[in-house]
Amino acid sequence: MNNSIAFWTIVTKEVRRFTRIWPQTILPPAITTSLYFLIFGKLIGDRIGPIGGVSYIDYIVPGVILMSVISHAYANVVSSFYSTKFQRNIEELLVSPVPNWVILAGYVSGGVVRGIMVGGVVTIISLMFADISIAHFGISAVVFILTATLFSLAGFINAVFADSFDDIAIIPSFVLTPLSYLGGVFYSVAMLPEIWQKISLVNPILYMINAFRYGLIGVTDVDIKLAFLITGCFIVVLSLFSLYLLKKGIGIKT
Amino acid sequence: MKALSIRKLTKKYNNGFEALKGIDLDVDSGDFFALLGPNGAGKSTTIGIISSLVNATSGSVTIFGHDLQKDRERAKTCIGLVPQEINFNQFETVKHIVQIQAGYYGIGQKEAKQRTERCLRQMDLWTQRDTVSRRLSGGMKRRVMIARAMVHSPKLLILDEPTAGVDIEIRRSMWELMEEVNKQGTTIILTTHYLEEAESLCRNIAIINNGQIVEHSDMASLLNRLNIDHFVLDLAEPIKSAPHCTGYQIDKISDRSLSVGVPKEQGLNKLFEMLTAHNIKVISLKNKSNRLEQMFMDLIGSSAAEQS
Image 1 (cartoon, chains in turn orange, purple):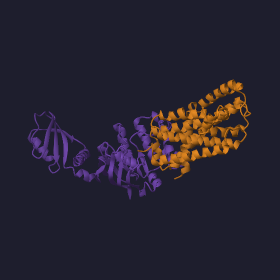
Image 2: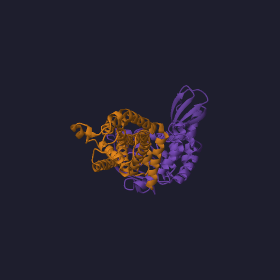
Image 3: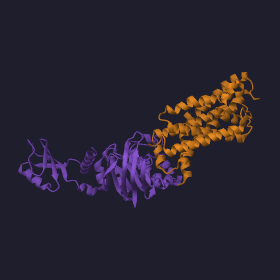
Image 4: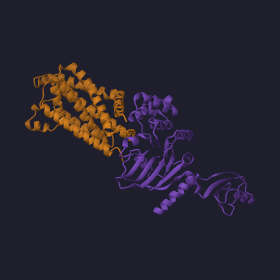
């Protein structure tokens, strides 16, 4: 059994799926982020003034890019894997000799590719509004990929447990979006009262956004090593948990 | 060599329902095997376990000598499944559905394309290869599932009610196709509610009821055990009541038709002699029920009686 062929089959299928429906998957973040940059960055941002030594619009660009990556990597895997369950074509995979880790890697990679494509589109749009020169390319790229991987894994777990299309909307609406907005996309946590600064530190998205911001513009509210450690730990734990769910067939077998 | 060997297989669902109560089952390589049973008997659970869609509670499944638990990859490579319900991605094209499945079995893109063309041509679907699958007719969708199941050339093909809900023309063409596939050496396990389908296609049979195998033999010897054949006779002239013919059980269905139970040792010649003596002219006769159907009902009935 050639696992690499099975892996690329899943990845190709996933990429073909979201590119086929690009007006639903690629176009909306382009429009939304253009509005963010125009309203928050230009119109309001000019009155806020600089943060951490950079203009407000330059400050929010990394957070807006990563927020798009988070939501779209998550959305890709949760909607695709849940649809696969819903239409029962998950059975095509379960009957075949594809190992569980290849199934997981294939779906997560599909989410990462969508994250990269959406992140790329948003980055291009941001260049029309902001003056970004990448401070640490390697750190930016690694944080970008790790964040997309982490939220693809989270989307996979959500899809495994989901019993209806409502279940795949709950986490993005009530958990991901609030955590992203409160993760310092539009502000520095140093601007918050002390108690809220401490509370913000339990939000893992804060670390990823700040690590990415450090990579792009060299400004951060948190320790970069700690950010990598937290992201890495989450990826390991979620990967192991996803493999456990696949092995037991939870949510996909009876 | 055994294509399939099942030992002490049990399945208890979370709600406490015991779907399989320790079944043993063997299917020879090259066989065309019928697995029959009423709804809820355990057929789909058995097939689900063989094809890794359902977790067994205990017991073992061996496919062409490969244990499904210990030698999972090789065991699964031997199987092709045509499920009861449409389960492919309805937004994919016919061609992609089959090619993707080939990829899951580690078949490279070039070969996958060749195999896809061969399978789709065999299923008479090549002209529909670029059609989005949800636009196909019911019969075509079933043939897509057979093409998908065949693309990796499985040694064991499991057909779970493949002809359910399709018209008679498609059903007959699918029978021919299944026979052809079996002749080429593929072992086939068929579940169906059309018992004439099982009787005409399958050489061996197992009947499952209440999670237990109640019959496991070859089709010919099973049907030989049927002592009475039931016929419907169409009459040339109307009759007032059913005639009395010693040794036969005769009931009037209508003025121009009779139901007759014919014991094997009596035969039909003597019946016709007696009917002629009663001035009854028979213009045609047909089996009241399919022979396997009658045997099936007897076995299911006696199994239910034993349980109660």
